[in-house]
Image 1 (tube, rainbow, N blue to C red):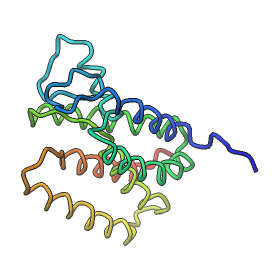
Image 2 (image 1 turned 90 degrees about the vertical axis):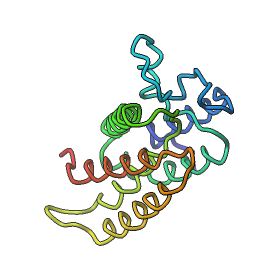
Image 3 (image 1 turned 90 degrees about the horizontal axis):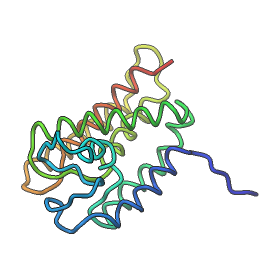
Length: 181
């Protein structure tokens, strides 16, 4: 047996997320790292534009990165096998940037982590083998469980962006139905 570099995008996301963890301050609102998207728009700063994508590599702590990477390492290879590494990278980038833009337009607190990407992959994988105009029961159950959980969690006061989770899942549904033939 030999070890292979099977899922380029998934493994790069993993490595950059471990790297980004070390560049986050405990108080995210004070962080000026490119691995945190500050809730305040800073159009005059180039690093703010970069952080619209790179915030997905920053995580608040080890539990945060382990939770996200467990899902991404499990599902990412399936997504890459179905869509290829280029389309997977593009789906991740578009989802991250759109989530970031909407987040700063709607909220004023910092955003970091790849939870939205993890949710994108959860929903996307539930649609991977659907054909035509079919809607798999597994997709409906995933939506009910994960979206229901996030909607309930959004009623609590915390610093977690349930919006990023929900929007990531919505993007997963979009990519799953769109299919990129």
